[in-house]
Image (cartoon, rainbow, N blue to C red; front, side, top):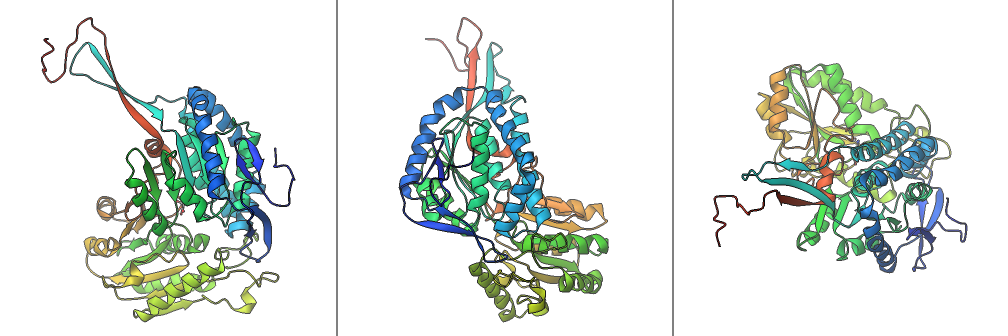
Length: 506
Ligand code: UN1
């Protein structure tokens, strides 16, 4: 059921109840395309997190005692809810985080794909049968839930990423305390309504709305067995550092990237330009997998540049709810400033600016959207140098460097790998040797050939190397973060026989 209208604010969802919580402060969800307030929410406190964790701890025993298949039944309910409320939820995502409407809807689709994967996986074999050195022994690897999983999720994928984190954790038998991004509480509210409508037992799923202090209360609490985090590298590294020092607790963090696309002299330039535009400007560059570096061979550089620049000059920025919009706004005013700083840094470091639509012209801003946080593409070329900060620091906006290289694929890879991050990347080439070299030597978790470096599917691991994280919040790999492994060894004989030739004589 939707939350009861006991007050004007949207509430937290703790222990199966909609609640005001302990705090007196509220915050608002604001449409980044119009500046309009969409709804007001209660700001969660450490006490609210405490109540949610207590509920999650209390619910754990009964939830873990259900069979996988019984737990999956709840997820199938949620799957149907996501499909039924597809249009509504997709539009809410677009209104709340500014991504254009087909992306808002695709994200809901991605969420139900994850739920479908997790629920269906409940009927798949789980664990391993492992050979023993001793013929009379049976050995297995079995899994059991870790307990309470704290989920901290970003605004740029406010439905898909929470379901990446929560669907598998739930089906594996964990209970959840979720703190969504403060920019997208309305989407989180609808997700909580779905959980409630699906009849999830009380305490199994808890939502605390709010800011980083509520997230920190989750991270720091000893009752949390796993923290799953997707978001900025700054916060992720802080969480990984804190949790890493606590034995028995685990942090699975998936962070950003400074993702690159290599266009070799063997590239199909139609594909190269298309892939680069999608990767750099979809979601206004605000995906952790968005590309901010295009590394292009000298033989095709001029043609690629001309074609890419032509599209960047003309790509449609506007109302996310209009079907012909390609890019919506940035998430908030502070983020526009951050993008401005990155653009300025590139210029200070010697960039030759090719497209500067950072400040959109008045005629480009749709009527009634004057208060939106508008930014357009910023494209520059610069000579590669390992000391350039603009080629290393993630902007998280439509900010992209063109880098010309000469020489072979290994030179392109050297430039490509020269960032502290390692999330996503792509190569465009018709030469399979170059593709395979990229596959083997690119220091990234998500590698694409003749494709954009965005658009991962949920059945693949999602995560990166280096500073991009230590977590894979999707598919089979995420099971590792939310389960304990038990090596279960059983003797079928009436005598004890040891492995490694160890004498069993007493
Ligand atoms: C993110 O960028 O924060 O691969 C997640 C993609 C999406 C998920 C992106 N499936 O583009």
